[in-house]
Amino acid sequence: MKEMGLGGDLVALWEVRLSDGVHKVGFEHGTTTGRRVLWVDGEERMRHDWMFKLVGSEVFDIGDTKCVIKIEPVGGFSYEYSLEVNGKSYKKFTENQSKILKTWVVPVEDSFMRIVLERDTLDVWVNGKKLETAGEFVDDGTETHFDLAGHPAYIKAVSSGNRREGIIHSLVVDDTEIPEAVE
Image 1 (cartoon, rainbow, N blue to C red):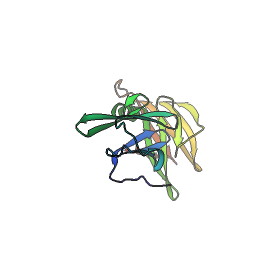
Image 2 (image 1 turned 60 degrees about the horizontal axis):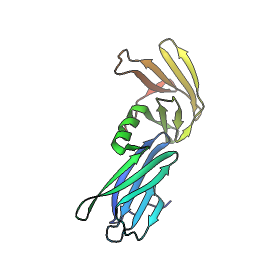
Image 3 (image 1 turned 120 degrees about the vertical axis):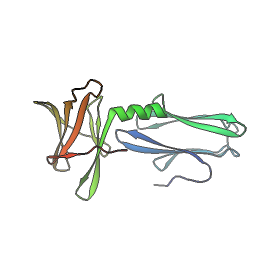
């Protein structure tokens, strides 16, 4: 896998947090040549070497997620670069994802596993793959059970008792509660 060009033309770098992982999006824009290069996770996805029109947009996908980079003039020979993800500004999308996705990083044997709960669908993802889970009602809420590389694991959902806070989700692996990761 090639590394992003990271040359003098790199004008924007974003991290897009999805259920299957955090994707790095880089955009190069040569304002003298019109060159545009789009990178996703270190892979070159699009290249235009000579473009006379320096403004406009580039549309691409990360899996099923539709993205648009907009290039707009801000005066003189300065440009502003913005990313839209699923029709929302990058900032709005990121805020929304932080409400929907709960993420934990768990050391298992010699590596780390990234576990993500999609709060809106209750899907559980481990290292970018959606898992089969088994839900069960318990006295104080629900438990969603799954296997984590041979280790019994479950995500417990209990009411916070506070309407604004909503439901609290916690991950338990081998009877040990795992703290939520900050991404």
